[in-house]
Image 1 (cartoon, rainbow, N blue to C red):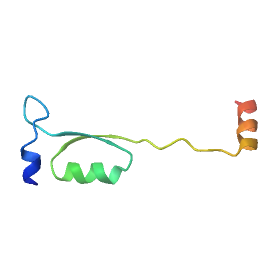
Image 2 (image 1 turned 90 degrees about the horizontal axis):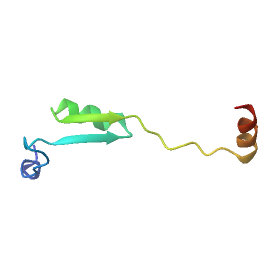
Image 3 (image 1 turned 90 degrees about the vertical axis):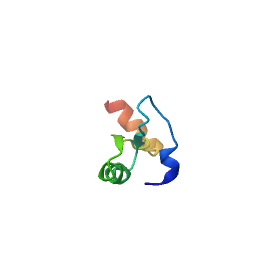
Length: 60
């Protein structure tokens, strides 16, 4: 591991914990290295065309 990571104290147990938001590949690689990590499957909201947005708002 990178020596800089060993100098970080992020909790009482001196463990590094990661919250990964977005690309799951980063989370998978962290877990393979034994890092405590949680993954949040987040995507930015889709921007709809105005006419489609109007139709959907009437239907829903």
